[in-house]
Length: 419
Image 1 (cartoon, rainbow, N blue to C red):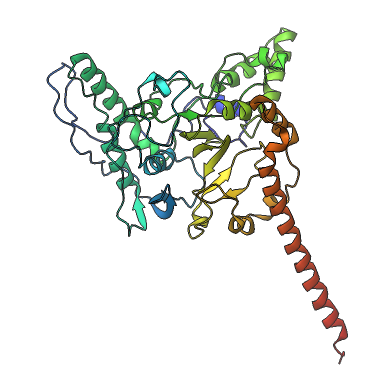
Image 2: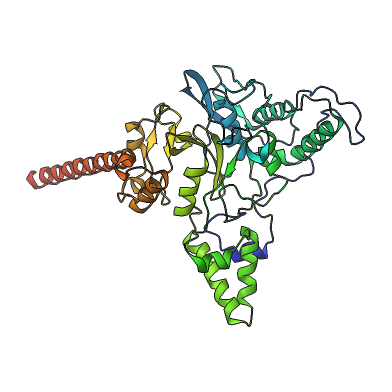
């Protein structure tokens, strides 16, 4: 979607499609990667230098221990739509797979064994290992773009085929037009039929070239036939236009269908549904690093032992070494913080905002659906429930201590002699 969840979708249609944007295609980075449009012999890829128009933003670097290696994580101070950080953090976390052919030693290939990822392309990235100096504490958007540009250029096909080189040249040209938007926001348009279903836009080329899967969880429940009929295979933008058209129609059945579609958007304003969460858990491969899109935000996501986790990039946790991942197991935002080994982090529990700690109720429907889908006993999924219970108990203890301290202060004030 092109707008925050709290914006009326009808305003989006009035403003047309590209309201999020964030980067003009003109004035983008300049590049001379090799073969021209006429198919001349391609030169070896050169190191890419971003244009001076790149954002002057800078980000703090958080160093974590990942798979036994000291690894950087780029943090951000504002929860904005920054796909650049999500993609770069994946490249940093993939240090074991960098520069080697195949799947590495921790990501499982698809069931078909063909070794193909998003877009049906073989996972044989030639991207050089992305590393930062060990003392690096701050990095600019320009530096990140330079690293990313070099990785994209390194995807040049090994085969000297003229057709492959021309295709690579076209992909590079398309990518260079999109790169300026990575530090602000991309125009992505979800379809409600599958977790990897997006309307194909030029922005998608970046994910394809780097073999980075892009997912969302905003799906229609197939057990709701009225909603399925109203939404169909439309994208978000198409659905908004349909709602406006149906409201102005003279046919009562169309008006009713438009109201059903509008109610779907309103009731799923969190842009994550139970069915979507189940499909995400079933679709994402074990150990796979991907980008998760929700509410105009791009997050780095991984699947570990059947559960989904999002990389914590909030700058507020910069010094919290034990807060690395955040569980994604409910649609209401209730979650648990974990360390680099996916163990419950008590440090994160005390740092959570009060409203997050007060969300006590466990999403039993989702847990049961997930257990049935995976053929597991629901009792086997109790780890996250226990973690949330521990966080809730700790919060209650803090509240009781605060209340007790407040009562003591009141008693002391009452016992003091009045003048």
